[in-house]
Structures are given as structure tokens and as C-alpha cells.
Length: 318
Image (tube, rainbow, N blue to C red; front, side):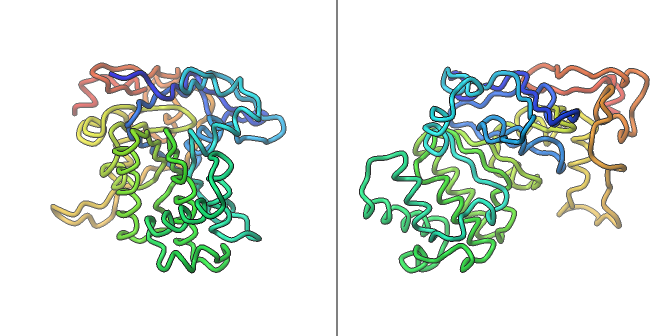
């Protein structure tokens, strides 16, 4: 097995008295696609912003280790991180409205990233921007390259952000809800683009999404997060076919089935997301909680399938 491209150990992110990420650990190998799933507020996006050093909130506390190609990113200076962001690690942000500058054209913004990391001419950077826009499904890219963000629909802005992230063929692509604003046809094109990035350059992908269908389509490994913690980790087949954590059961049960009898009402997870701060973060919403849940369960398991739950094996099987 190749050495991990990115290895995160005991990552903790606090904003004042609130802990957004609590001891998160995971690794991503070259060419691997890691799907990170969980409800809004589970810590998916903020953990990746912490990895890239993009949390600038006054008073925010970030600790742990984030090792990328042998370097701890949390110890690097701003200039060193700027050389890595966009070139070696790129991120597709969740909201394309705030990821693009309204006063510059789409093509200028893509070309700017290319020229910031590579020694190419303006013409070459512009030509690559046009090619990238065509690859992500923007019609007439030769004309639309000179359009401003407000002249694009929400889905087209999302595709432009994806083109920008792919512009330097990064070794690691962090995609935060990259297909949310896209129709199913364009969604399939974007997933094919990410597969091509992996096949051609051996790039790894961290896919943050609510869409379990996207995860089942592209991910090699799946990380389930809740309350800022990892509650289950395993291969795609393990997590989808033999889920072990009650929260994962709830996520999968809430997906409509295309075969079998039609459910009159989809099952839901009661309560609202968030950890109480004591014991298992999911205990307040779990139908199977018992006395042992007053303590935080460790993430343990065998055969690469890990979970953080005190529920005895025989009860899980039943």
C-alpha cells in the first residue's frame, strides 16, 4: 500500500467554548477517493478548511497534525501555504457565489490561478481556461470566458469553480458539495472529470457531500461524521452493505429505495444535529442508547471497518 498523501491526526478546532471538530483522524492515499458524509453541522466543511489553513476567525484554536507529503501544514507560514493551496491541494467551495470575485471575468479568475502557480503566458493561461470551461460543460466557452459571475446561473458558477480547482491538476482535490447545484447530467460529467483527474495524475479526492448516491458512485472509502467526530470509517462496500453505527443506519434509511415496496413515509432521525458535550455525541438522538453511552466511544474495529459505538455486536446484528 502506498504511503498516505494526507494524514490527519487528532485534529481539533474550537471557536471560543464551542468545539466544531473533536479529535478527527483520517488518511487519504494517492488515487483514493474518500467520501465524507454527515448532516449539516457535523464538522465536515470546517475540518477541511482547517486542513487548508483557511480558518481566520479571531480566537479560533486549531491543534493536531495535518501531514501532507511529509510536511505538517499546521506549522507552515502563510507564504508556504499559499504555494500549496491551488497547486498541490485545491478546494471546490460549497457556495460558488462567494468563491468568485464579482468584478473580474470568469476567465480572468481561472487564468490568474494558473499563472500564480505556473510560468505560462497570459494567452496560454486563457486558452487553458477556455478548455477547462468546455470540459465542465459550459456552452460556447470561447465567449463565456469573458463573462462575469453575475452573468452565469448558479449551476454554471459551480462549474466555473470546479474548472478553477482542476486548473493545476492538484495532487489532492477537496470537493465540498461539488454537485449540489447541478442537474444529473452535468453531475455525471463532473464525476467523470474527477475520475479522469485520478486516472491521469494519480490525484486523491476528498468528497464532502449529503448525497449518498454520489458517495456510492465514486468513493473508495467512506468517513461518516457526527458532532465533529468520526463515527464510522470503512470501504464503500462495508459502509453501504454492513453499516455498524446507528447514525449510519439513519442516513441510509432516509434514502428512497428504487426497488421493493414504496415507503409511505421515509424514516427520519429525531432531534437536531449537535453533540451535548458529554459521552457519545449521537446518544441524545439514538434509539439504542444505554448507560455505557455516557462515555465517549473510541473508533475501533477490524478489517479496516471502524466505528465508534458501545452497542454490543449481537444487538447490532439484530
